[in-house]
Image (cartoon, rainbow, N blue to C red; front, side, top):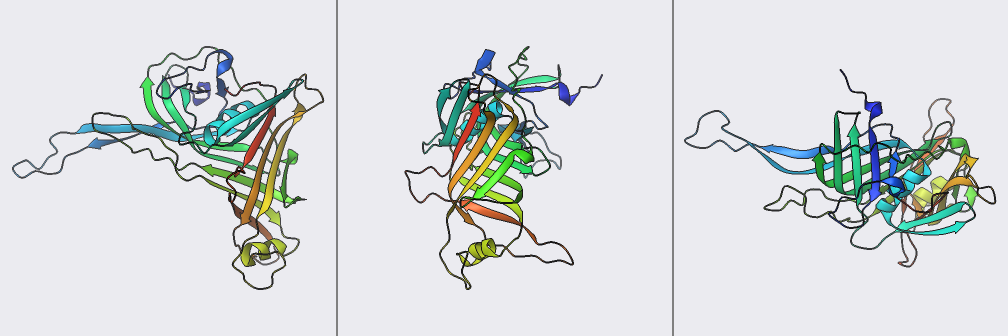
Amino acid sequence: MGYSSQSGQVLFKTQTAQGVYDPATGTTGVAMKLRGGSLAANRDLLIPDPEIGGGRDVVDAYLGAVSWSGDYEFYARMDGLATLLKACLGSSTLLTTTGVTTHTITPSDAAQLPFLSIEESISNGLETYNYTDGVVNTLHLEAEANGYLQGTAGIIAAKQIAGAVRTAAPVWDETPMIVGTNITVTYNAVTLPAKSFSLDINNNYEDDDFRLGSFFVGDLTPKRREITASFGIRESSSALWRQATYGLPAATAVGGLTTKNQLVITCKTYETIPAGTPLTEYTLTITIPKFILTPYSLDASGDDIIESDIEGQAVRPLAATPITTCTIKTNKTTIA
């Protein structure tokens, strides 16, 4: 008998306390449909060096300390994405109107971001794991004009147990998916004719803080946060290239200063939120107040139309202003 990957399930729940597994029971957690991915053990077999007086063969080996990490790939749905975004950035507030809740998620400056408890079932009956103290190290979102909004979450977890009890009836994120025809990219208050976009958030966790007397990683603290984004366009003028390479959109020679403009990515479903008044789509809006374009080249080839994948860096010159703000509109009044 073989085991099908498709019959597995993965559940997420924001932990109430570090070090304590918090099961995703009832409506307090969320089960996400995944395109693929799982967490894997980062562990070495400790083999001793050759010894004088010993034989030519390895005499023994022991297992070393361990952490778990991996990527989960998914079509972005709003309820599950809200949980991952909060774990990745750290802070959230909400505003509830008739049938609609707007979750505003911003980066936290605290030394620690929220931990996740994760239940991962590999197939149905092969193995079920419980992970404690999971963190979202990286979060990637992307979409093309003729495709779906997709994501990849890079997770690190401190502890795992196997042989856990699989949740029989999890609460699945059944909110609608989003396609490229309902996504817009605005830069400096101008809607771009973007063919694609991507966003990357990296918390730069280390997963090797091992300590004497323990198998497990002793600390998971985020380091420098990096937020980058890119969008693909068909060039209609050289203004963006001049801004990225020379520093200003009207410059004709190189300079040292950079132009910082607001980047806004808005993603909506076709479907409206049930019982929402007025009619409101499930929505993700990503706002980066200060976004600097990375220098790039205008590539010409044969009779190809000139198109460019333009990348950029989010910066935060004012401490009072978040480097990014993500708002999610859904009918769920809490983030799992």
